[in-house]
Image (tube, rainbow, N blue to C red; front, side):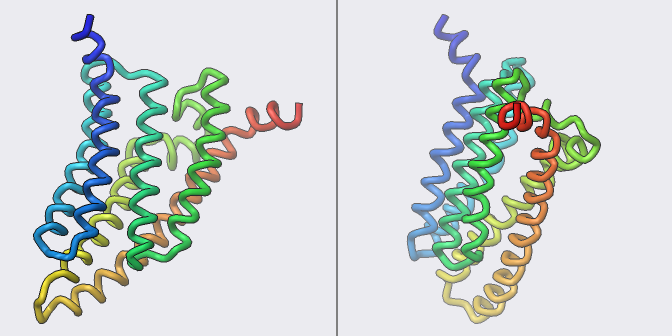
Length: 212
């Protein structure tokens, strides 16, 4: 019985491990020596890989569930919001980025909760052409994940370079800083598009809940 319980919740355990790793990442990035910050960068890569591993395990072992999907989404929200806030605190991304993501998280998850109460899983509400293309499709989810992880990875790399005493450090930091800010703006724009698709695809549910 215990073995079956562990097997059933293996993917959920990976989600929990991913969230815990993010706290380790921030602690290591908060240090001032290059070794600790480099370790934080490596741990960040591991956390990003676990974001793929939990889904792979759930599908391979056929233990996918609506609750598992919600837990995975919650894990995504916690990790990305923590990292956006952390890097904004470090001055590496504009303050509007974490503010936007925190607000979007509440609104999007509220809508998805209404969808869930109607018996729809995470992406089943996305039935329009745009919703399927920019929200539910595999390519859009992978692209969105890569964009966010790109922000976190290169912002972390800046912290590593800042802790090193090299002649090339300042030039690299300036270039990476501009790239991170630009990528953050692009990611916010893509997130807005995805959110607009979610609202559009959920219009019937929203109308029923607020106008009926």
